[in-house]
Structures are given as structure tokens and as C-alpha cells.
Image 1 (cartoon, rainbow, N blue to C red):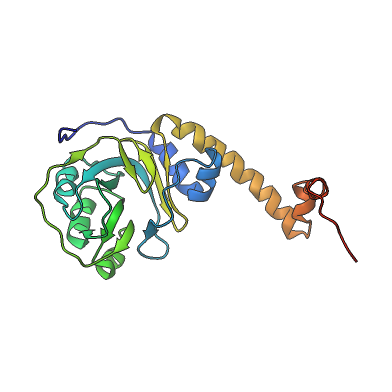
Image 2: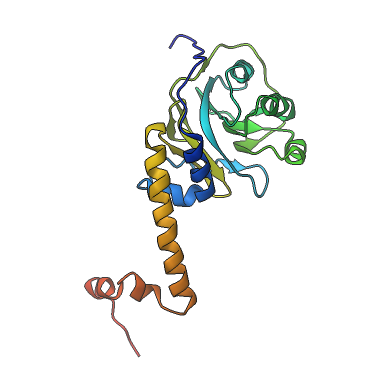
Length: 225
């Protein structure tokens, strides 16, 4: 692939992004048929990290953050930067200085399938980052990559403008074209769960709520005593 920087992308409606962010990763993942979840090794760097926004995608080489710097120029307020690498890496490709630059351009979070660094400073800034590793290993700025092309980050396909939702449960990707649909399905699921929660709180058993007794019988489970 020829190194490319795409300046303009389509973004979803802000209201759908906000709604998906409020629903959270677990509910959104279930609402879209348990799809789009990034691998669980991608973890938030501090407790309570939370972000949702359209994806600005970046394809980098391991240990080289040149294209992250290049991508800042095309970001808009509310975006989440998603960085994939062409080969596995845990080098600390993102830290406090880049976060300062991203925040100045309104970026609300970073997802990087490599290492992050300056964790104490990023936590103090309250800048949410999900990364593969934490490492002080330095990087260079030497190799061309691409910005706003389709990438695979932590096992999930991300198209520019897809909605990224991140919280303590991980990171999930919602296709831009389905943002409104998934937000609606997520709200329906959340309302249903609230009803189930009340029934469980009152002492009703999940076995009865989910009609699992017949399944146990069909599986040959025998009660003794």
C-alpha cells in the first residue's frame, strides 16, 4: 500500500456517538450481535477511563510514531485516534507530549495496539488511553505509514469514521453506517436489563427468568437430595 493521508472522512451523528458512549462497551457489544470487540489485552491505562468518538485511523510501523504526529492535523473535536501497527509491538509509541497535542485539537481518547508511556502524567491529564502494553521504550520518526485507511487494531477491523467506545470493559467498534441502529438497540437492551435487574433484586431466580429449567432437563441434569 502506498503511504496515504486521507484528510476528509464521514463521521456519524454526534447524538448517536454520545448515546453509544453512555451505553458502554458491554451493552454495545451485545446490541450488535457480539461483534466489534477488540482483544482483551487492550486495557485502559487508569481506572475509570471512558471515551467515545469517530475513529481517526493510523497505520504505523513498530517503534515509529511519525504517522501519529501526521494524523493530528486531520483530527476534529470529539474524535478518537486508533493506531494499528504493521507488526506486533509493545514500544511506548504514545505519551504525554502527543496527548497534549491531541487534546489541543479536541481528541477525546487514544486506542493503540502497541505501548504507551508517561502513565502518571496521562492519568493526571485525565486523557484516556487503551494500549497493548506500558513501556518506556523510546521510538523514532522515520517510516511512512497511512492515516484514515482501513486498519485492524487488536483483532477488530476499523474504518475511518466508525464509532469507538472505550471503558473499563475494553474497546468496541461500531460501523459508522450502523451507529444510529446500534444506539437504538442498545437502549432497548438496557431497558430490558433494568427490568431483569429488578426481578433479580426481588429474589427471583435466573433459572426462571431465562426459562433455563427446561434446558437443564434437556441436558440430562439430575437433581439429588
